[in-house]
Image (cartoon, rainbow, N blue to C red; front, side, top):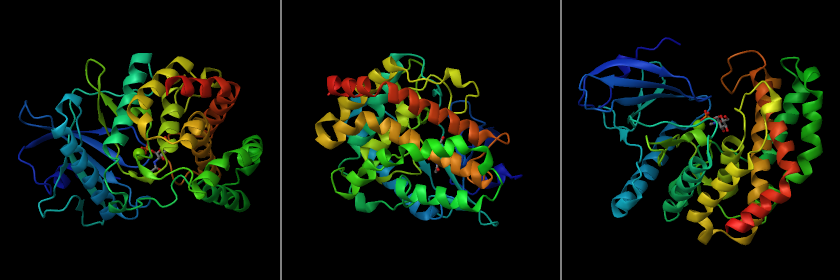
Length: 362
Ligand code: GN1
Ligand code: MG
């Protein structure tokens, strides 16, 4: 879609004159642009188009982000030693926390976090430890924000039973005539479903408490400064009540995989145990005092659970003909699925060791 980015930015309440924009290609749902400004000492802005087909309640979503960033900002004023940054939402000229253009499209603007970088594949254990501490801190700083202030931006986002229902419907409809190509992946799902359903069972039984969680804790949603100190958590669209297992598990899925999420050479996919160990230590440093026994006992398994749920979503989208995740080539979602399933197999082989690491880090 062609968009007049400069015109859109003019609807936000900013002091700087914009110079140029550059599209950012990470992320499978929204579209992002870096906006540079004329003044050299201003960090610039980060503009995002919010995908309203997926985020149906943008007002609620932006109110969540403002509640969360406001809460974090006040905590960081009280705890300056944390040297952490928080996203800063810029209001539109009519005072809203988003701008809706004449075509009905939604946009938001942040101050750009400059001199920052992220990791798709984690390079060493120091970075993993920093990342674990950062997501642990994020969650612990939000522990006293009342969960009923937040809207469910995507209801049932990590609800495995609902995801399986959708998967079975997609197989039955076979809209893109692709079911014939994924027999072994469908079999993979079937053989693990019962074991994976133990997590939703624990949630329903009230044994896994709902906390305020990020719910999209890909490792590259942590920004690092030039000395590789983790300094900011981004991508707050799905911050809402959830289980801590979702957040821990998704970071391991992305951070402790030796390969990228869409690596075509499956021999590269494996669990990196030293990275897993370092992330776990960092995460538990900031969360151990709040976790209950059921959470601790399922922490290692949560990495398999989250990899399963996201792999299942990639597979469902492949079967549907790629209607949800942005893809760059025809079997992109299938490649992503295969990586997730290969990673699950690697974690199955290392399950005992992964649990032992949690117990040694607690
Ligand atoms: C999507 O757009 P992005 O990259 O932040 C997805 C996550 C998946 C992820 C897989 C709202 O996140 O749930 O884990 O892709 N976000 C949404 O890479 O569905
Ligand atoms: Mg996201």
